[in-house]
Length: 106
Image 1 (cartoon, rainbow, N blue to C red):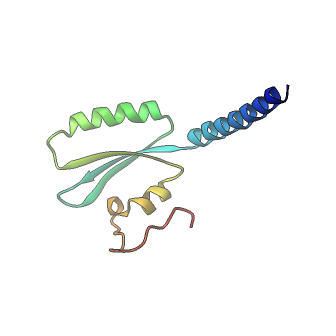
Image 2: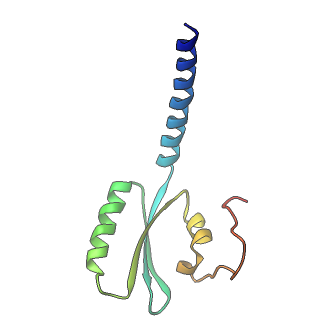
Image 3: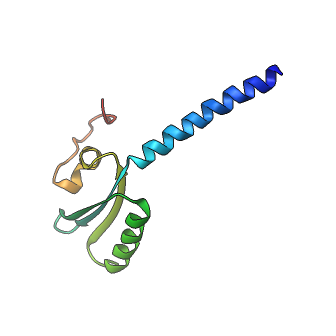
């Protein structure tokens, strides 16, 4: 009986963790970035609510820009500000050379 109770408590904790992870995944935005590698500038940034739609657009964009100097990148994050902090070179910024890694929200 005691083992059954421990299993139930463990399962409840894991279920709660999965629910939180699902909720967090649903809070993500998906950003399709088009970047001119030669000119080193952002061409476009398209925001998607749904991952499936973003992935389809990404696959189509990759095909359309094959062989071009355009980088097509798909990021998922809570906001565009997070992407700008983690990948500043796409937005005209540069990470400081040799700067230590700074976790988002630190």
